[in-house]
Image (tube, rainbow, N blue to C red; front, side, top):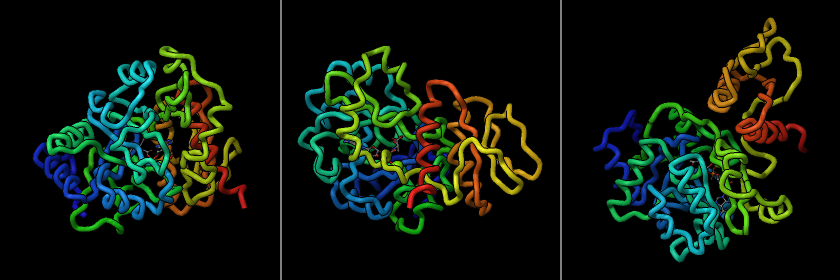
Length: 323
Ligand code: TXA
Ligand code: MG
């Protein structure tokens, strides 16, 4: 696997060609790093599943360079979805829409709908437009981690997670630390109103500016197909505990306004909720690298991105109460 830091235009072109030739390219987005494959190439996509160890009925998000490409992948797009796309793309939002002919079962996990996103990271956008210049239609990219593990938010964590399974033709583009730090908001656009399948940096009140947000009973109906909605997800190896007092030797993640008790290992001291999201997974990895048994986390309180942080924290902590 070739790792390229701060890729130049020429290197991004090379990565686009590698994708077109059926190889895998991990690349930065503003949310987390993705493990990319040509979304129309069944063989390449099947490698994504095997590298991640992910069940094949869990659908992948197709990344495109702009809203102009949306019609290629989706049909019967509701007006509110177009409005959301116009407002929040490029950005940390995935729309679930009725699939077109080119969104095959190997992308959608056999479902009649497809997830689509335009990321805003300049390396991702440039890779997408170079790929489209070569005749590519979209890049399928799940987070570049093993199934169930924490998403990578910097390049080194990509090769720590999956480096062993990548071959000499695959590439990792290093574009620095991801700005948002947690995965995109996933919005189902299959009914009269949008509803949130996975909270993220585009918040419920952001969506409400465009449309009323839909009811929870509909959400339950399609939840099982969202792998991020499985209880055992986003888990570091260390045990994650919420809202306890940390003891000596514990890892500790809380806003900077909380002081660090004696003997406690401070993993990060973010200044704001946004900053908290950005450092969350890096703090988890730091605890794992240090071999800590326990991470005590004080979730930031408030609305907006705090909902998304809380969602990830609850999922990260659940593993340890399950059998
Ligand atoms: O921020 C992100 O969304 C990152 C970056 C790389 O774009 N990608 C990401 O992909 O988080 P992944 O595969 O790790 O998580 C995507 C989630 C999965 O839980 C998947 O099941 C769900 O989106 N998903 C994808 N397509 C779907 C569909 N058609 N219907 C329902 N859920 C879908
Ligand atoms: Mg993931």
